[in-house]
Each structure stands twice: as structure tokens, then as C-alpha cells.
Image 1 (cartoon, rainbow, N blue to C red):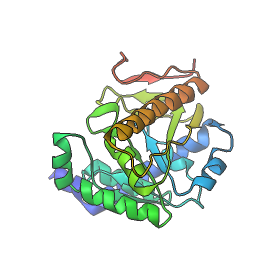
Image 2 (cartoon, one colour):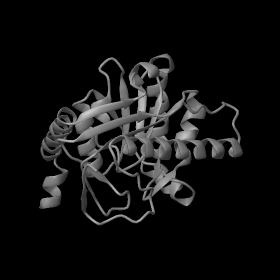
Image 3 (cartoon, rainbow, N blue to C red):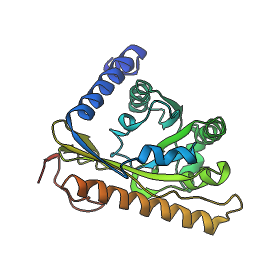
Length: 248
């Protein structure tokens, strides 16, 4: 019964609205540093763009969107994906439902809507909507999947690594080392340099682009964490379970 309630539209709408309210609280009660300071203006000449994130570090990203920059996000078809999509909608961000993976998992992902999601994302970009989504291979955090590079190749749009960190967070012992950002501290948002993929890129060029996205995300997160007085722990690094990280 609880699972059925959790899957209901009403329950997901309520959870999504509460999550959006919490994100606004954290956004309003932290002192923010942006790098570059005009990072939103820097995006304008390149719009629409592909904004890449690390899974588990994406909670505050919707609050960084400017109202005049239409955007959509890729959300999983699971209940948590539905809640996240609803929360994003409160910030004017639409959703593309689907998932992606690599290798043998990619064939399964296509049956879950990954191939259709790719087509919808291409349509969104061609219509002027930027795409904002996590670059990780599902359940393999810290490794960028091929999908983001492929989307950049097929669309001709640049990829921007992006990171948001806060000095206070509840860091979970989950596969993606998820951080629940907390209010009343300091925050930082860092935009990396654009990564472009040629339309005739072969498999080797796509792999090189994937690695650039991965390195760009690590660099952006390392800088964002440094700006709030913390050290970025890359996936696989030891970290305390269920710890609250605070200002240092």
C-alpha cells in the first residue's frame, strides 16, 4: 500500500513541491560565490547548451537557473525521478523521462526509454531548450557515460561541466555519494569551459570527449568545494558514512 501511495500522482506532486521549497530555502540562506561571477551571462552566446552534472551533487542546480533560459532535464522513470522532475518544474525546467547506460546495459536502457529520450533531447535542443542532466553511467558514479558526448555530436551543442557545493551538507553513503545541501552556510557554483564534439567524430573522438567531460566535472567540483572550504572527494575515495560536513 505504501508503494502504491508513493507512486500516486498526488503524493509525487506533494513531495516535489516540498523538495522545491527546500531547495529555495537552501538557496536563500547560504552566502553564494559564483565562478565565473557572470557564469549565466557566459552561457548566453552558446545557447542552447548541454549542462553536465555529477549524480548526487545536483540538488541545488535548479536554483541556479535564470528565468530567461529555457531548459529541460533528463529524469529517470522511477518514483524518485518523478519527484525530481516535479521539483524542477517549479523552477521552470521541463523533464524528459528516460535513462541511459553503456555496453550491454545500453540495450536494456533503450527498452526503458533511453533511445526515445535521446531523440526528445535532440528535439529540445533544436527548439532552443538547453539540456541539464547527470553524466554518470547509472550506478557507476564518477564515470561519465558516452551519452553526453553523443548528444553533443548529434546536436552540435557544447557541453558545460557544472558544479554546486555548500559548506554544510548531509553526505550519504550511497552509490553516488549523494549530498543533501543544508541551509545557513556558504555556497559556490562553478561553470567549466565548453566542450564541443565534431559532427564527424568517430569512436575514438567520442571517447576523448567523454574523458574531457569527466575531467571537467571533477575540476569544477574540486573548485566549488574549495570555495566553500571543503575538499572534494572523488568517487571511490573514503568518506564517513552519513556524516554532516560543515564549514572549516
